Amino acid sequence: MTQGFSFEVQATDGAARKGEITTPRGVIRTPAFMPVGTAATVKAMFVEDVRAAGADILLGNVYHLMLRPGAERIARLGGLHHFMRWPYPILTDSGGFQVMSLAKLRKLNEDGVTFQSHIDGSKHVLTPERSMEIQALLGSDIQMQFDECVRLPCSDAEAERAMRLSLRWAERSRKAFDSARGQAVFGIVQGGAVKSLRIESARALSEMDFHGLAIGGLAVGEPQEVMLEMLETVMPYLPANKPHYLMGVGTPDDIVKAVARGVDMFDCVMPTRAGRHGLAYTRFGKINLMNARHAEDSSPLDPESSCPAARNYSRAYLHHLFKAGEILGMMLLTQINVAYYQELMAGLRAAIEAKRLADFIIQTSEAWARGSQSGD
Image (cartoon, rainbow, N blue to C red; front, side):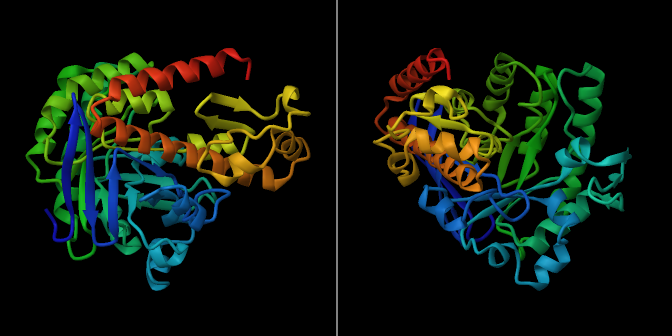
């Protein structure tokens, strides 16, 4: 392990693990959910409130930050932690997924990807070496290899081509990683929905001495059962003494089922995006505050929540804010959602330690099912 970075499994319940990732900037309790701070901000939230909600680590995005304001500028201004006033751990993704999904006129070859910015059409080149350089300039604590992520469904041939290219890029990313400017670097398992490709990718990456391994290329259009099948396929081939990170996932149901299969880390834009569109995540399930049934409901979203916004503001007031187009509604609901996700992770950690994970998952699923049946 890089000096200052370590992972310890403290308790297990079946395949599920409760543990801690130690970094020079703080401890990350696992299973962990990382709020997404795409452009050096968790949208509609102060970082102090993100921390108060229980987050130990944030995710930053290479693609967006390299385009605006630029990695070199952030480095001159003291690095990403200082820039956004978040002194705790940050993981940066490699930019590969966003290049494939957002950029204009992409051209991919063995060296990397040439693309036009979705912001102003300017031309850029992203290679494994440049991605690692950008992440070093940002100063992130956990850096991700540069990879190619294909959307599902895709042909087996396409999944194999992208997986093998990602493995070659993984070798280059690992070599380019500067341990003096980052605590850890993770590899990314690819292979689409093909079991043999996933296993080959996991085995090869496990031999490259990454500090953790991520499962990429899921939550990109496939049914949940396919995602879970790929997890069950891959997990036996991941080093047990290193963190396992499922990228871009997801719903609370996805998370609890992935934790039960041995995943330690998650990220997703879902709680913040939903919060900006009037949708609350609570222990009762999803609640659509745009629904007229809330217009005269003076009860709070959840009187027992750890989040003050969920306890102190009525559903009627939150409904009014969204109907009136007030920014405060987006801010309050985003805070509520981020807090719920952190409460969910805390509940999972406690359940694993008590060896009651199966009961916790059943209770969570039943509560969400009742919420879904309520018409929200």
